[in-house]
Length: 318
Image 1: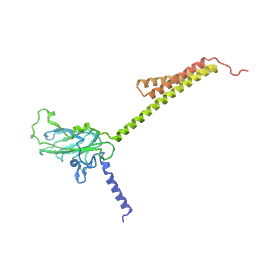
Image 2: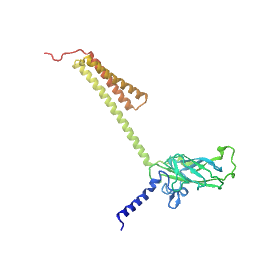
Image 3: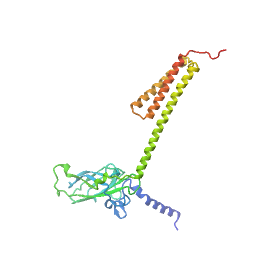
Image 4: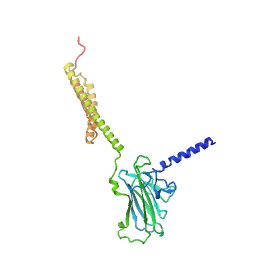
């Protein structure tokens, strides 16, 4: 019977086995899938387990024949109708030297191979030819375009490009250096323009658009109604004050001047902010809110002036 520590060790190993693919894939694919090399056979955990022409895997900057000790910049790209990003792995069977660039890294199990260090696209790597003629150099490149849902499912698509670079002096290159470099691709370009719509994604987008419409219209009616009620309340208050209250109450100048200065400063700041929102084309909610606050501040200045000009009245009369 296993001891407590032994059971914990077994459970820990099982957990590591289960999460290993999830930890490995974002920072690069595993070197092996079972007994097979992923760079040669692909990974059965993505797509339907087989390579797919729906993803176009390309590598550019590849010479027809290498020059000894010459370095070349390779650009690895993935194209898919709906999956814009993914990952890759490339290997030259350690004939030359592959150097990672931004977004790529060496493979831990095989330092002579490279893979992505994070999900992305259009990776630039450096390949340096060997110092001696080793004959034709084979390359294996596997690219995986993922759908971004964080799962290893049929929505991902991968493809494999196998190519080679001839040994020095075995091909006739044009004098123009640009013509000696080539782009190698595998996949069906027509598939890039035949994206199938996911019914669930279409419905989710429709629901999101409806929610956004209701939110915008609800805000419009709410703020419009609130603004009308505030303006109506101010007008009503002024009407009743003038008709039944004898006008605004008197405010002595010793109090009116500092109050007017404070309210004027607030009004000036709010008007500047309102002008900023209009000039910066901010949302209508921001412009309406700042506009209403500016009117409120200006109304406060008006009330201070009106109270300062109002005649003093004695309220306690016998």
